[in-house]
Length: 51
Image (cartoon, rainbow, N blue to C red; front, side, top):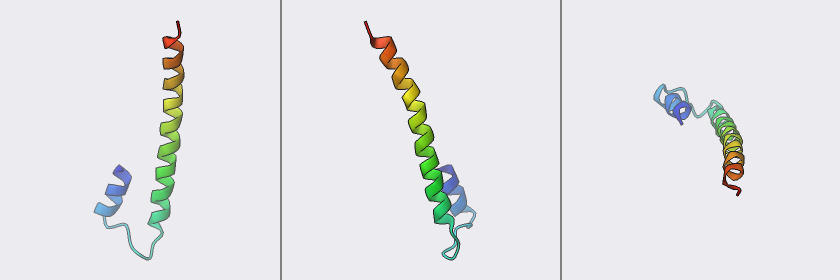
């Protein structure tokens, strides 16, 4: 979100440029990293809640 905001604030996004591709890539990278971090947390939580 910070990257998207900074691109638009600096007027780096133009209709003729391909910034939308980079924004889409950054969103996917964020989703993958977020999913991987929650996977570890869920495994730890599941291990700690077992009797």
